[in-house]
Length: 122
Image 1 (cartoon, rainbow, N blue to C red):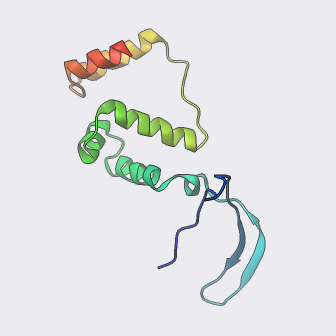
Image 2: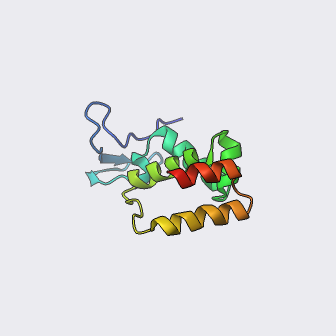
């Protein structure tokens, strides 16, 4: 089994690039400068989280159960992956919008009263 391509330099943390490709069947070789996909630059932990997130079809409650972590931890991991992929956090949501989101999740049974109180204090 071949090793996975490193997306980040183990020395300085910079982005790696592929400079040579080889065909396993006919031994054709192509040299150049090729960009890796954004997912290649995720850490193994981030890739593992994304795999669980997809397995759970984005259901945060299921991700919580699968990983044995709290809702805020799942959200933090998701924000971490989004940032690593180049997506900035959505800062347009207002404080009242965040409160409404927490109350809606509480109403839907996605979080407990204690979790809702904790999120509202943030």
